[in-house]
Image (tube, rainbow, N blue to C red; front, side, top):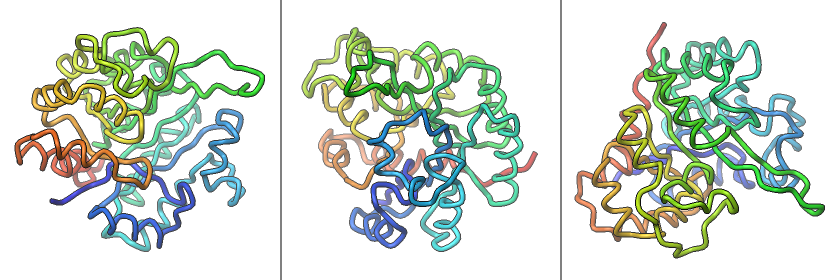
Length: 295
């Protein structure tokens, strides 16, 4: 089956282009959405610094420069979909996004990952520009937790699940993909999000959380099924996950944000119909990353 990875990064976790392509071939991935990441240096921890190219490159644009995404796409254009997300706090953010779209053919706005509430006017301006350009926006959410002496930096990003709803409501013509622990913890209607980034494996789903409710209410919301946060959420209750995907087969997008393949065996074991699996692994991503349009 054709597979598209709808979330990954250049030079991420020690993978240069050669290693990246070999990993894609290993897992049968035909194309990858390749994302930048722009934010201030004091917004991410030392542990994050160890797996990003910024310290090596000496870049001032953020942890993962758009220039590295562009380099990969220029060398292997048949394997990558170009993405770019400027820091929304930059007064030139919308102009930068449009330039990436018009000049270089960027099709996706990602990854948005800043210590700012995503429903503020600067962010909404950027998101509406992305909507005008037909670029889906991938949002990273993470809640703030009490820092300790050993871990003084808490990496909160984007706000809360209420922030996401405000964004969906304010930008109905923009497509958004929810991503990361602050999004996926809301698969269940419980209070785990107040105390932990990741529910313990096997923690049951309590009724339906905000994710299914938002999917019903907002047709511009999609689910980025990448990283341990998604895997943790979907494996909490396989029967519930199957019902959720079947209820919204056009809204779940396979992605990795890393270089493993741990989610795929679980999805394959759910017994989903063939057309739903096709949509999950590539059809929905192909539809979202449509041909570039001009404004």
